[in-house]
Length: 155
Image 1: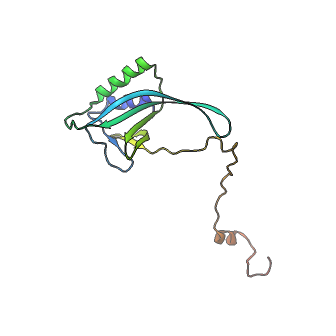
Image 2: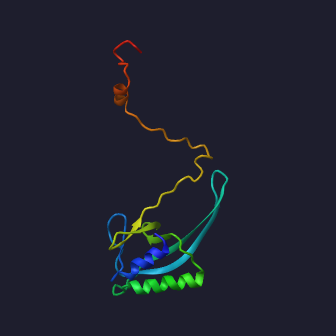
Image 3: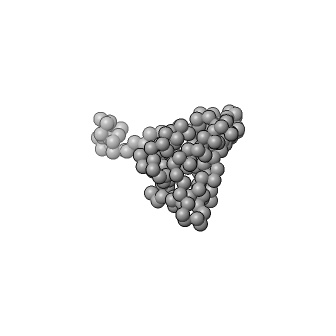
């Protein structure tokens, strides 16, 4: 989800809820402790220099159970960060404390913001020797497609 999308969704919500991939909700007394722009400048295993930028939200739970972040307050925080940090309309990455700091993508189901799992991947598969995965075929299907039966003595 891009920054412009979350701002549009926030306009239509009465309250904010973030849902973890396991279906549990982030406790509703969470804080958004950071909104920032994260730049990553790196070289992949194939030797290509790359640069990625995302908007980062950090969610944090405190012991102030009466705290509730309202949609208009989060929109104000986002708009302030856009101006102060010159943030463009980038994809959002969310940090949340699990066993360690976990990073998630962000989606919306019409009611809750969904924290989506992220996966590592090789960005240079064609350049670093990773073989292309071949399609798996069941041997029983090959026998049906092939006119030669192993018991027919034609092989």
